[in-house]
Length: 380
Image 1 (cartoon, rainbow, N blue to C red):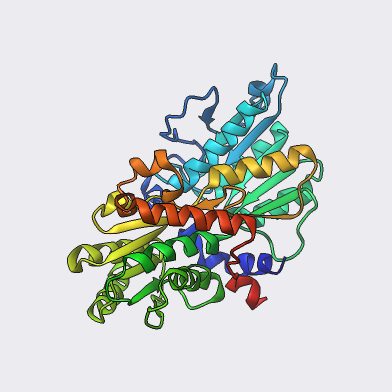
Image 2: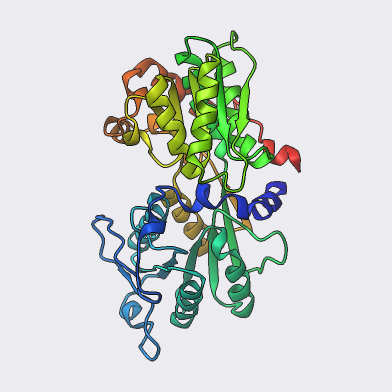
């Protein structure tokens, strides 16, 4: 798949968009080789544990179980990081559904990541699940050195030299962005919409271009798309610069602004609160941050993606790269789920007619009736 090359080439640029949904996990402190509890409250029989100390029986927890054993490894402490929380939830859910067991090894830095992967390999589970580009190089290294051990890598893939026992999973973010555009096209009063985006490269146009395309599908009176790019030394963590750009767009009359800048999004949300425009978030539900101004979010449903990948590997049907979108439950928006929407604090919940329109469009995308072009694939 052509997009696979881009995921790897752009890995260093997408740290916060992929790995830091929720944003606060970097602030969690923990001893280098000890995993802190995740803080999740799912009713499961599995636990988040540290990697076993040298000399301990790493496979002890898996003994006695008839089902498969999975180990989930993070590059950072889970803390309040919803992206990493969902990866753990998905791994646990797959284990329970298959009558097996799951463990989580939380890392704090590259050194502890390596120690955790070494311990996981020693435990020899059915699958080791790794998340984000931060673990890509180690995934290739350890998968190559342990050809009988199966690995899954979520949200990245090596550009070349992918071992046969390493299975990658990517997201079709453009499908969810198109649905957000439908909301914006309906809600705009000025017919001026746009995006504040981390970088001007094909990967991020999956969000911004698709957002405008979705808006056009319901509002032919829109003025030309306006996109600005954060850039600078740290486009993913520069809320001040993102806020300035959002304020500039608002001054031009834009009343629907999609924020695609990871931690920089907070600046756009602040600008929305000050100037009264509507905005849209990425990866996780950001609506509680500014409940009167955030319409919805382009979600990466990592828990579903992990379960899909585990099922494919366990059934022997996995391919080197699996793309998940609306059809697989890998991406979405809050508006697609009644239960989640009710508690989301997202503005779209106040517009049931738009919610229904979004759901119809999602069905069209899944059936193939609506085609959302992928700017990343077009870039080849």
